[in-house]
Length: 138
Length: 103
Image (tube, each protein chain N blue to C red):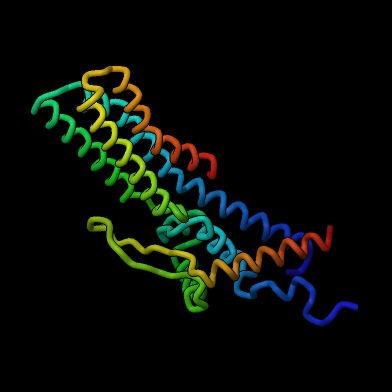
């Protein structure tokens, strides 16, 4: 380090590299947004449409969504620090909310469009909040 | 009187004084891991230059290199080791202290 200019340059270079790396890991926010959007359609389908065809349609649609998102994630070149733990928390909360929605929606609140809409929002919320946090930290 | 070695420049990491190495470590700092090609494009160097600088960082224990595959495509992943993260934080703190001394 030969002078104040080189110190400022080094700090600027480090900051720019960190910012660019964070921008490159923005794919995870898009992943979560797509998952949240999928829940807005899939959860009401699961709660309001009954029968074997409905069950099969839901299972295939959910598998396609998760499969497509998994392929998208596997193709990425960057993984944000701490995103593994964050992903486990989001999936865990989503799983608990989805299970509760299905139990309530098939027992005490059967065929209730209001509950289906609320459940869809609740199931989309963990991923939507995760996407918002990702965007905020980029 | 200032005691010898108390100036913040003594806390600078000689390995991170090289601009490319500093950029590589800075790029890896907010990430769990990044593909070799991503870092190469971000730092704007050739494969051979990055390979040489990464080898120096790996030798110092600052960067870990993992080879893997996605489908048929081989991939080389780079990640910042705990020692590298600590060295980068110390280096940044020293740079900020020097800048503060001058301002």
